[in-house]
Image 1 (cartoon, rainbow, N blue to C red):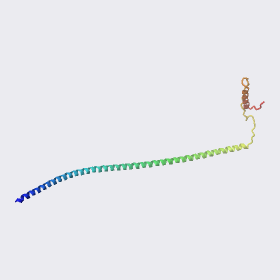
Image 2 (image 1 turned 180 degrees about the vertical axis):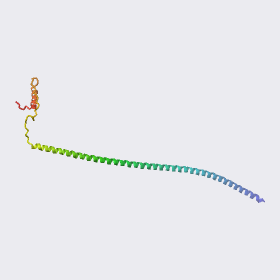
Image 3 (image 1 turned 90 degrees about the vertical axis):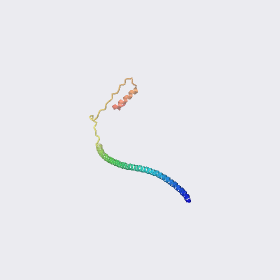
Image 4 (image 1 turned 120 degrees about the horizontal axis):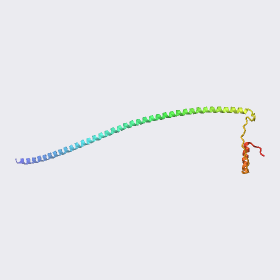
Length: 183
């Protein structure tokens, strides 16, 4: 079979090509497996990183939520304290206003009382003045009702003082003693 050798060689070449292609396919499959394994590792690493980031994000959200809740608590507490302070201020203002009103009332009462007393004194003085005006002046100049004036002794002229100084001193003494008859 002379033609079989050619066919065999042709088939051998085809087989070699087939084997080469199978080897290439096997190598390609290995590369795909390696690439797939690398991708799986990258995906797992990415997924792990993503999970960590998600957990960190969730933790941050929880922390933020806790801070917001604490902020709300603090805001509520501050509002409560503000309300209490305002209530105390209103209470103190009310007490102060009541005390001011009481003091005003008391002062007004005292003023009216003093006005009444002063009016009574004025009426008494007017009555007594009226009685004095109606009464005739018939006072006697008896010595028992007269009080003697104190007299001042005049200095004697010694010749050493000037006449002007002596005359001035004498005029003062004479007017004090009531000596009106000048010569």
